[in-house]
Length: 113
Length: 114
Image (tube, rainbow over all chains, first blue to last red):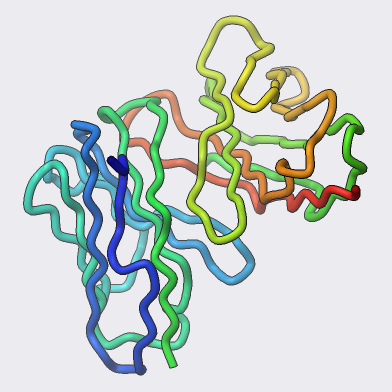
């Protein structure tokens, strides 16, 4: 009964490919997030959705497109992968917008060769 | 804009010793402050948070943190560390209003000597 789950856990792919990462939360939360953790462990927000509506887009390249089919899911599609996209991507969710605790998934480790 | 500084990139302490991890934030209004822990190869787990009220907050695993507005600090403490506390620790801040995003510090890696 994992609260926030991500698939796949590991993703190794070639430059130029398109890939997707899926995230699901079973906490009944309204708000979901994508964060990127680089090789120096620095965490930075990429996107946030509230009730399937995009509310935060932090100057992320257009190659990254989040999609929220329903409140419980927030997927991340990446086109034309580049070496610099190699990172750990974390999904998170919170009860609602506002100063809420965010619950994180286990992360997806993406390696672009 | 918010920012967080964790001055110590790596700290080593002996098992049973006390621990203090430093965190300084920059934010013009009342901050909401968090400490998360990341074990190797794992996601982030919330240790504790400060929203308002008592400036000394208790968290899980025996951790506590104290909010000091005058020093813009939110340092994490534990009186006696265990080998299982070895991990990466992140301090984060979020705004009190509007769309929420956590702004993280650079993290502090904690190593425990037996």
